[in-house]
Length: 436
Image (tube, rainbow, N blue to C red; front, top):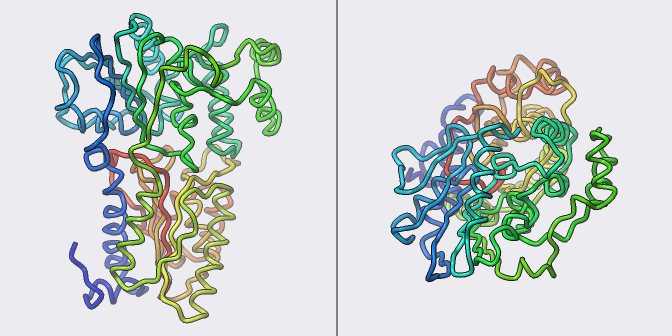
């Protein structure tokens, strides 16, 4: 899109009477912000060790096939490997030689992912000192490559995952628990590959870009403990099978630590991060005459509280007569009370924001997950414009949608869902409020 500050689209972007123009403008902003985080753009200059032995490539996550495709013409011709991605996320037409592609369930792991994890472990067990394990990691890998630790069943792992997803725990706490219930996360994969060299190349979906948390860090030494995992379980009142609790209490599920000799041949780097997406969004809004206000690229916390707070900030800037764009990234959380409700953290955030704005003129925006799917729904996120509460059936109806965790249906009723399909990357959420 070549919209300028003088164009009709720009002038109409805030108007209640023309939501189609608003949605077109905001969707273009979303797509342009994602561009630097797409593997084809982010991985052009990534490097990895050249070894005299074999190269085994393990790509895992929502961007797994896109990451592999971005470097296919540069890996050794004799390389073999495995790509594990979410169902429906494989790049169309990408069928690399000597690479198996598996589509598994997310956010709750399934048998397909578990079988892929065992295949990966068997492959790395066979690597020697002259070999390389090249890991391409992106968000979603924790669920897509489940390998329950000895004594833990897949159904038990699934039950704990569901409890973590519903309790409102931030991703860092979720991944600490996941690491200590796994035979592959928390550095276990690199320890199994030793004495081979391990190189991780990652797209970060973690607030703060802690590389040990991306995909629950299968190739990165873990500084958290079984005690930390137990404390998180207690904090959220999660029920554990007695055998798992006993193993955590006795440290039988401890992970490889930074001083472990088997972790010394494992290195990692990040090729794309949430800050890249937010910086691109800043450039776009400034090009359209807005003053960009960066609220942070690693925001966490309750999605509803975040939506309310950002609405108040938007109102304050409007009162000052400033034309601003409030931009934020990160991963908010939703505490699920109604298991029959529909909606992810982006629609929950935006519905709370819309209710707080109460139809205030000249404020519009969107919230969307960069991977193209908000939670477990089929939308990336949603749009907001001044008249949206009326399109939902009124403020009271919108409040009822929010109270029963039904934010998806609220925006569906308003024809305000942002639908993109899988984007090919995953650098957390992008939220933008435009104030004119």
